[in-house]
Image (cartoon, rainbow, N blue to C red; front, side):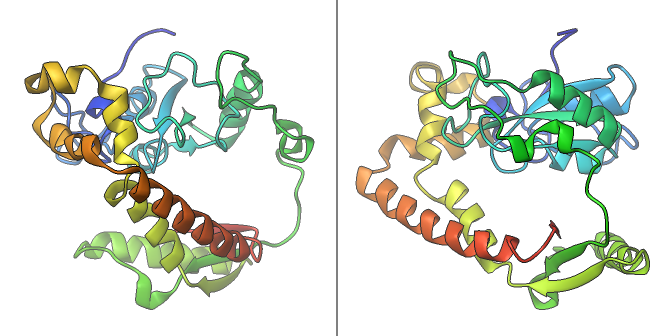
Length: 262
């Protein structure tokens, strides 16, 4: 490690502005957000202060900041990188992530960092078909799944909408097969994380601070985490059952494509 970076407090946020140390601004234009929660991890690489960095990802924190700072953000499947020493947001879901300038460097860092850690209960060995020696081997045209046009949401950002649609067309021109898919089960699964009982994991991660010194927490972060104190076991199991049902639906969709473009 060469230093620490600023991030959304307790990894709670996707914009990079929820920190008692101040906002972490975009590497290219300070008028824009950097994305979060691993804001500083992405900006430090985008500004050339480091050749790569590590972040965390519960929902998008290792990819949103990469997107907004022109980097590659790699979220390995859960447990491939040890989470020992990481303050979790949702320990059962969190992943260590990598920010780098390109895919080759991302793969290099992953190949060095992955490995079973006996001190991390969620750590696991990487199965052979997924190991980094497979990187760059695949050949041939791609079949890419994209969100159904009637499910796309840009929240009034016409420039982002234009950029997305232009990207899809460019990929088509490069020879990829593009096919629309039903994105609703993915969205429902994502909402479970923020609107369901998993917020209790955030509460557990921040004890005893949120109980004894709630004023030390960024106000928006505190508002998100506090309700987690009261979630019931019944609500958790109900949500887990629904998540498993959604996983089956999402797995079936993903199996039809080489990758998804969202």
